[in-house]
Amino acid sequence: MALEGKHVLICISGGIAAYKITLLVRMLVKSGAEVQVLMTPAAENFVSKLTLSTLSKRAVYSDFYGADGTWNNHVEFALWADAILVAPCTANTLAKMVHGICDNLVIATYMSAKSPVFIAPAMDLDMYRHPSTKQNLEMAEDFGHFIIPAEIGELASGLVGEGRMAEPEAILEKLHDYFGEAEKDKSLSGKTVLITAGPTYEALDPVRFIGNHSSGKMGFSLAEEAAKRGAKVILISGPSAQTAHHQNIEIHRVMSAKEMYAEVFRNYDRVDIAIASAAVADYAPKEIATEKIKKNDDSLTVELVKNPDILKTMGEKKTHQFLVGFALETQNEAENAKGKLKNKNLDMIVLNSLRDEGAGFQQDTNKIRIFTKNEEKSFLLKSKREVAKDILNFVEEQISK
Ligand code: PMT
Image (cartoon, rainbow, N blue to C red; front, side, top):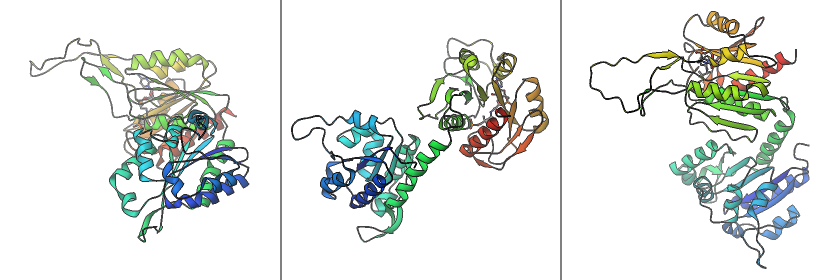
């Protein structure tokens, strides 16, 4: 059911595993998907267009232009696709994808993609192990693409090891799961969710600032998860290297607490749920020096003034919003979190303690406790993606009461 009517664009590059894509095309078509195949010129050495077009019931393309001079419009292919699968993905095609080397129809289409991209690498043992391949796969993951890892087995070279393309059945399952999840979990559709993320930087002079260690990972995970559940997400982030890929996420990047405050209240009236995961600086320098501060004296005194408390103001201005705060504590954790729940007029607070190993800043994991006025729940150490799911499950339970 999940694949029924879905448009799957398969891009084949030049590796021996290309022959297995004929089976995958057949299975996808049997599952009700519509399949369009594109090939790199090198892929044509491994599998015929005739076989693939017969199985997919569509013409197969590998050039920017047809024999009669018609343009094979890569943008149209990209927009048609509900998912793009690059399989087998050779070291060469992978490198071109992540570095934007657009010298064939497959790469031009990939670079115009609006839909999720799945990559099934296939290459010889040492190529798969090579640092450049590892780095390119990491980059592809950072772009938000889904990697279907190569398997261990006998390779075309006769070597045995990791590098063999995942079997067509495994690739089909990934696509099936993706579309199944997407259909199942639209529990926040129609809702607008505002999320603050990352640190704030409070400038001292043109080159220095007061900041903190927040990476933005927690907030970006929440944004991705809310978007997957169908919410329109307004993500207001301080300086962070994290990137957001989902089309439902509208990202506003800010620097300081005052900028974050202004951006939050430009949007607050139109949101249903607000989650403040940002680590906002409580104080900022009273004056920002216009020139770089010189180190003339042995000590330097900087006067700090209180920043606006964004979350507290959200609590004061709350009309219909379900308001979630975070508390990052180092001692008397539960007591402090409950204090913030009450003083900031929150509906729910998520506590993370720096005393818990693997929790808090920078890490890919977090360990949380959630408090509402009447309830309390503890969770185990999990990846921030899983933590985001727990938080949103809890929010959904509360708003459905
Ligand atoms: O970004 P990561 O590296 O993934 O780390 C995640 C995190 C540790 C930053 C995150 O999980 C977290 O705990 N965020 C809140 C950190 C914090 O500032 O806690 P606090 O207890 O000082 O603040 C309480 C709440 O008030 C927070 O929701 C905060 O966003 C908000 N606040 C605080 C001060 C201020 N001036 N304005 C605010 O809105």
